[in-house]
Length: 245
Image (cartoon, rainbow, N blue to C red; front, side, top):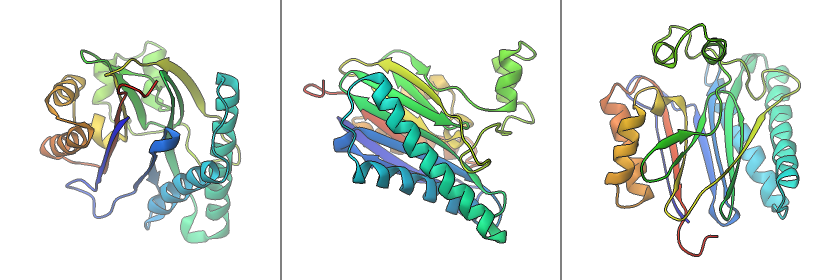
């Protein structure tokens, strides 16, 4: 599996509240986007990502069926939620901090996605970019209810209002998705700093332009900054190669 990754604070932010972790040999990819004042967002995202990574380092994922994999992902996310929530309650300077999180678990041609918040997972099949995860946002609820269109959602004033986050409440209820990929397909995980600035059409063109996943990540972040860079930008790209099945 060819894996690339890149994070950047963007052009408007003084610090980077995104965090990520790549466990290539385990097929586990993690991205988080923290929220909270006085650098608490940074603490939240890094705490959550480190907790999930540590869980799978201590207990390598051996499950092969969908139920078993989702159960392990849920356990890891619950641990992350407890740690972020507990830290926020213990220290007054961290009150209100939380983080989005999206995790991909690649098992051959099967990809299992777990997400909380609006960091996203996509698959690019060489022609079309398809979003696999679903945003936990107020605006997405409006779209699902038919109140606004997806085009209107892109520029809605409340587009960054998330409805679920790691550490926001004592309990967390993530979503799970399963999809299959073929040799040559690419998986993209990213924070809203990418898709908020770069259209699907631009992302598709960059995947076709890049020589490998590292270059694709570089080009994606570069384009997000060229298009405004209003937020932190974090991307992980992974392409299934021959022998990865």
